Each structure stands twice: as C-alpha cells, then as structure tokens.
Length: 236
Image 1 (tube, rainbow, N blue to C red):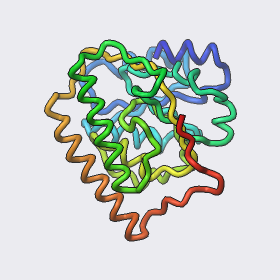
Image 2: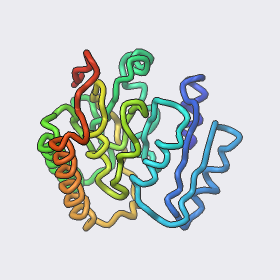
Image 3: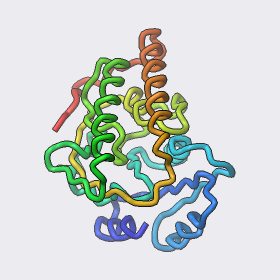
Image 4: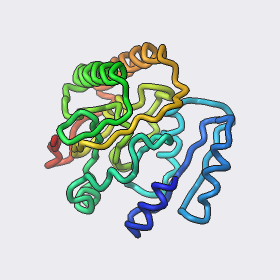
C-alpha cells in the first residue's frame, strides 16, 4: 500500500482507484489497508469466508469503476512500480493493449527465490503455456502465472469467469481479447506464503480442467477468439 501511495504521488492522475479485496482473512489485513483511506482513492471489499485468490480478483474486477485494471498480489512480489517498465505506457492505455509481466524474459529480475522454486516456476510456466495452446492455439503470453497483469474490462466478460482458487490465470488469458504484450519485470519473492507446497498439484489439475473447458467452449462456439481488427499480438 505504501508503494502504491508513493507511485500515485509521483504519477498524478494515473491511478483512479485502489480496490482491496479481503478474502475472509483472519488477521488485521483490513485494518492495515484502512489506514490508507485518507491517502488513496481506496475501496475495501470483504468476503465473510475464504473463497480463493481468483474469486477475490473477479470480485475486484467486477466492482472496479475504470476500464484499465492492474491486477497485483497483496504481498507486493510484483509492485505497481513495474508499470514504468512498459514503454509508451500512455499509448498502451489509449490503445487498450493487455500487458502481461514475465519473470523469464531478457531483462527480468527475480530476487529471493530458491533454486527449487525457480525450477518449479519454469516448469509450470511451460506447462501452462502448453495448455493455453491446447485450448486456443495461441502461444503469445510468456508467463501466465506472473502476478502482474494490465487488462481491460471491455476486453473480457467477467461474468464468464468461474475459477475461484488457483487456475484463474489461464481462464483470463483464454477469454481476454485484444492486443497482448509481454514485459520483463522485477519479481521479489516474499517469505511467509500460506500456500502449501502440495497445492501445486491442485493448481496443475485445475489448470488442465480449465484449459479443457475453454477448448470445449471454443469448439462449441460458446466463446469466440476473434480479435478486433489490427489486434495482432505484440510479444517483446
């Protein structure tokens, strides 16, 4: 929240609102966020019970007042300051180009991760990219799981998003229309994650099921991947 406050002061007029969604936490998350009520255009949304990361993100997307949405994890592993890595940011916003952060492109920096986590992340990156290709025939997003995504409400039907826990990244990528760009970011691993290591298997299974559902919807004509004219993907 402090990083967002600093960024907002340094870039006046760029941040319209900050939506914090509390996913039924049992700590003082809400109280800490509320401290910034007078410092930021802040709105806090609360779930009574824990529903999952992507349930929280979907809710935040649906209640957001503006079209351009920057999705960030609350641990700050990828900060709002990464927007400065997007060349021609104002033009990108005007043209509604979806931007996906990558921890693996040339120029990216990953700090604080163990070698095991780096290997697991790289393997999962390949797995998720392959499943998106299986679902849509597209290979244009480098790092689906990266917690830094700049997307637009007008480019996706939030009502069609169903995944609530782990595999929301691939669902958003499959349903999102418009131009897409990858940008290398600085990622800082934060200690204290409450996600169990065994959850990677649940995530892998949920990602596969989501890709299979997207493939079936596409083949059945229930979703369309036709891009707006001149919306070829921009892969840096």
